[in-house]
Image 1 (tube, one colour):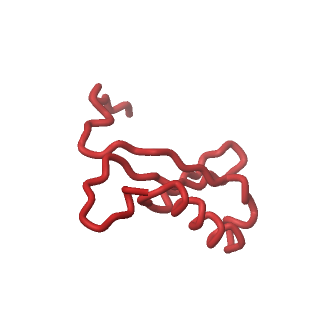
Image 2 (image 1 turned 90 degrees about the vertical axis):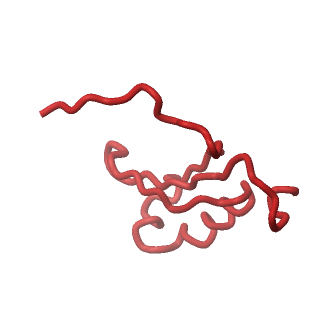
Image 3 (image 1 turned 120 degrees about the vertical axis):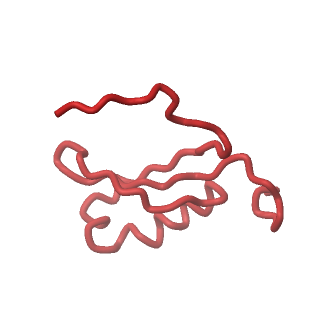
Length: 79
């Protein structure tokens, strides 16, 4: 896989998240990985740890494109 070659400019990474809670209110960013296989390996390392083991199906990962704006619409503050 060319993404794992040292010095190779990657176009994206895989963000690994864990969601925990009755209504999925606790989102934790676990890390950013060079490949899908690396993200899967992290899940295997973590799924038996405290907290994660309670909801082992709470892990998910997705590719995240680098060098691009992902939130482009601005935001408003609500009191």
